Image 1: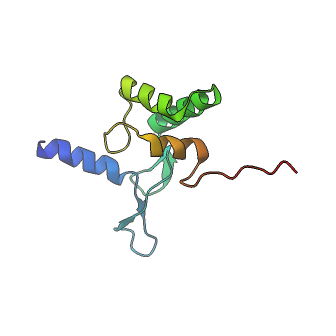
Image 2 (image 1 turned 180 degrees about the vertical axis):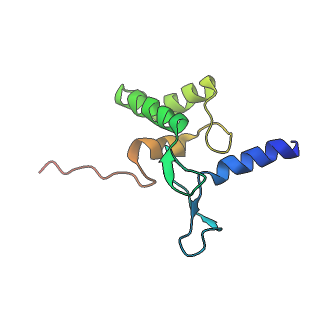
Length: 108
């Protein structure tokens, strides 16, 4: 991997990291999927990620399983922020909006 390619990848990954208010030159955490940081540090829409998010949610609403969604995204060449194929955990987070499984509502 050449230096210019590595630099571009690092710049892209850092565009999704949040800046700390007390030390704005330090990066901490990540922006939500579908958002990124602009050059001035504000959070803006990331069109590529928003499109992927819309497709994943539509596929799930249409009855696709998580495994089928992951397989189809991989076949289509869709990649995440680090340039690797999107996996099961990320697809789950896109659908449910977080890392924990949503609780079922009681049918009392």
